[in-house]
Length: 390
Figure: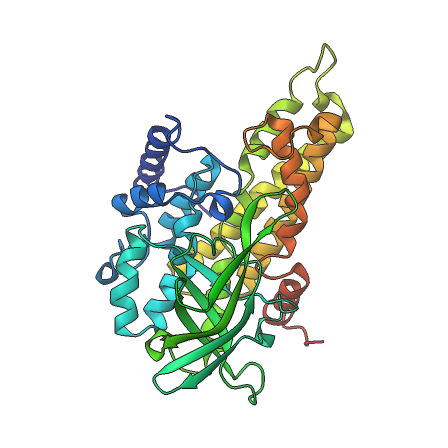
């Protein structure tokens, strides 16, 4: 099989790199690990929107470029490898926009899609709740119909970017008497409505991008309902595959990967370089192999999407493997740096040691967010290998 990129794709990659060198190397924006989770910059998102690089695969009728998923993979890989702050538009571009195109009404499409592709609005995900993580179908937030409105009551948690978002993509229960998969609906809710409040949640590194969101009888018009009432679970299913399978699951900490390999090859304090240790060389080789394998799994998902196919177990495979790699990278990097790896863990502008420490502390989250590895392995087993469900 020929894995070479076409000339047009190579030119596009160089165009993206030149843009990043101009915008980020000049110091206007600070490169950041996990830039798609914590790098909120409305200004940078608008610059990407002006280039036509948000909604790259969307049909032109909705403001997109109509390009394929391999082009989007190239764009995303370069953005995240450089540490570009892409969190502001990320959710809208990756999954809410495609959901609206597939199931949204004409008002939602006209009002939201052009603003997403221009980088003007941010959307957060109102999915997880206290006690409701991987079992999303158990959501307890209620949306009760009242004439032409729905009244929403409940709580969401781990909501990244809720404090800066303009809208919330909300999953709520609209039929409490139906089986749990059949009584769920999707909504798009403005974040400034009366009765909606936000409380920050600090993560283990002390950063704030997570939030709790409370809905105290928030009244929203029925035009905010996405698709069919009580059919939300079935509409959500394909969206979760988009969330799980991107290159972001592999390359969020590319700076750590790149720099720790370079560090291991350099003599330290007059001593031999760490890579002179045979066991450590094997660990570094394992990381290289895992990284390239992860890329192939992600590339496979993008290729399937470019062929008009919807990957499911393939997306689960990519997410499980890449999240495990991220944790392995954090472990090996900390072993190489030793005590130096514990320095300045709270600073994003710290030297390599501080960055590695932050990565190490945060690493357990990678196999939990967007679906635990246990749930995803079940998907691979039942839908990929055809094994019976437990």
